[in-house]
Image (cartoon, rainbow, N blue to C red; front, side):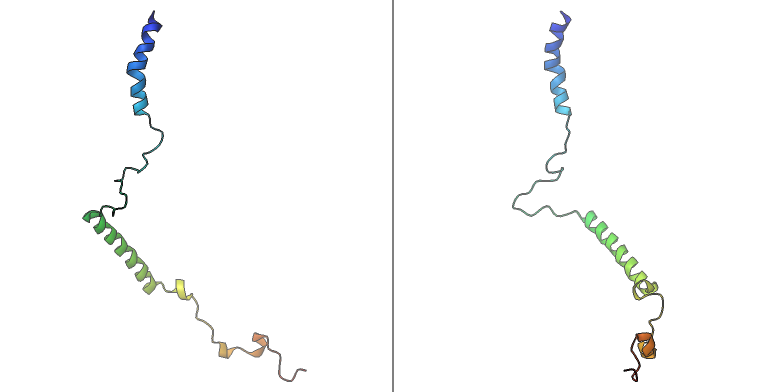
Length: 98
């Protein structure tokens, strides 16, 4: 008798609410506003301002280190002068060798 009254109760009250609340995947548009053949909405001023601040800090960091730690790009040691190299160091045989 309890089972005969419990099954309709589960069908009408509990199961639809469980189906509504269970989602195993996110929505297709990921919560963003859907636009089709129109330009997307412009970002807010705070987002634009934050992006400019972050990019300014990034470029300051890059340019500052180009000026102060330029050895990362040019190398740590002075480039040797090729005019001071001998023929033996370059692997050139002497002129009198036949």
